[in-house]
Amino acid sequence: MNKEKILISACIYGYPFRYDGKDKKDEKLIKKLKKIYELVPVCPEILSGMGIKRTPCTKVNNKVIDNQTKEDKTHLFLKGAHRALKIAEFLGIKKAFLKEKSPSCGVNLKIVRGVFAELLERKDIKIIGID
Image (cartoon, rainbow, N blue to C red; front, side):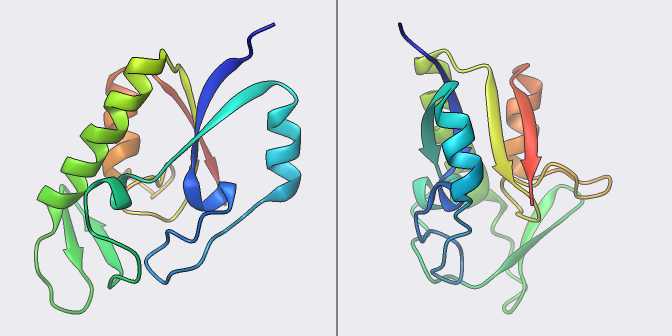
């Protein structure tokens, strides 16, 4: 029996893809989800070509700003978000578990959502934020 495929933030899955080169692995959640779904880990920031160990960024209104240089990195975040969306669309994914407090994946960033989370929402892909 084929399980439904869902996206999961790669850092939650255990890949050290965060800006600080660390992960946010949630073994308990992964074990629970694997019983029901086939997990597809993605990281829009890695897919954008930014690499690991990058300076942290913050989404402010519709822009993503590098916290140190104050450079606008929105174009990179959009590039990665669109690449990750192509994966979701190709696989017919309808649900995603995304890492909170991320300028890409954040779901409950008060009024401002992460770039990738916004894109998924516009495509009617259900998003669930994970702390």
